[in-house]
Image (cartoon, rainbow over all chains, first blue to last red):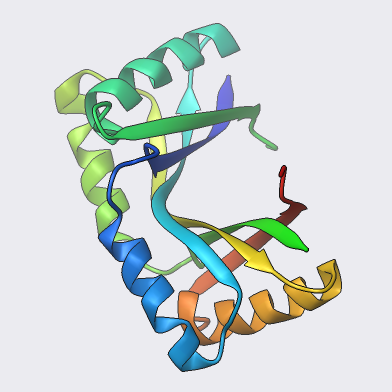
Length: 85
Length: 85
């Protein structure tokens, strides 16, 4: 069975985000006001083949912890859905 | 009114994604099989202050087109919701 997977990786609250701060500082110069608290993360999409959803989710949890994120400073949100085709 | 905003930026289909390809090539070495089509994008979160949702959305569309994405090679998905507090 094939699943579409989306892993959203965000820096944990309190961890400095220089990329987000740089975007936020530039906004008023470009004429955008009222934007606050910019945080930049990664959005990783792929397809995973597994016997069932539990198997896919267990492989994904392991993948996130070991490879896609740094669990010390990042949190991952995993979204799994059966592939359309 | 304050809105929570999430902008998910992905490379358009057909645009080469060297970061995704590198992740995909490394996976079998690490013992992860059955993963295919890895694409890496950006996930940007912030709060925007606007009179109403239409105003926030119009500022966001402009912000995405001019600053947060490169519309030639990237697509943005905007999610807007009233802030919790």
